[in-house]
Length: 242
Image (cartoon, rainbow, N blue to C red; front, top):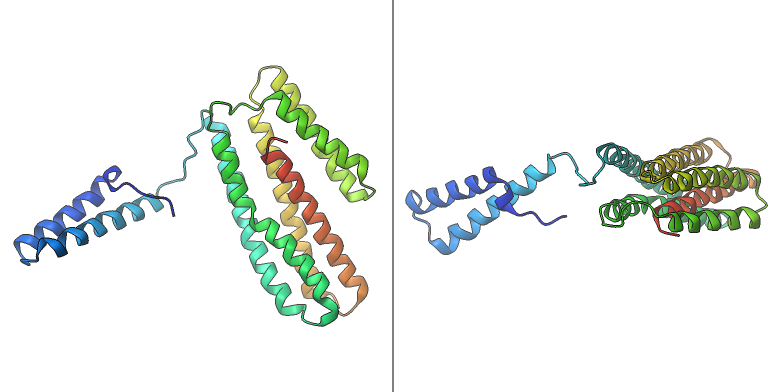
């Protein structure tokens, strides 16, 4: 929980003050009791008021802020889905022969659970004085993606990486033209997160409908888990500087 300054919330301070006056004048409570109690009330009120405020990222671009807040909501929804899937996999994959695939599914879900914090890190980085994406950073990301494409033989992975490379090349052109490439980068993140959500749903469908004692079914789960991990690796590539 973030620290809250009650002084930023006059209504919370007023509530604490009213309690202080009432405690001293009408209830005759000692100051050693009423002062901490009024401070607790003011702080609790401030926390409650803050929780009802819309989230703000304090970026210099309102449209970018809306986009990033939307992606953060997608990441939170994906994390909730991953928590649900992790629990369901633990309940359904119980035999000794299924422990390896269970571990794989759990690992993929754990990576998805990291997404909200990664988006928070990105939001903090986009607030700084170096918030405009540098061509050098984007070029590092592009080089990494190209190396991954060169080293993979998986068809689905190649398709993912080709799309990512196209997005990065487009963002580099924006940056070279002096335009703000951050929004395009956030759109690329959004696409990856939505694709990840689709893979998670496929994994859940497989868990619920397939014969989990069948080797082909567990192999399909393995393939989906690997695909989800690749999506998360590509998210990392866009979130960090490369």
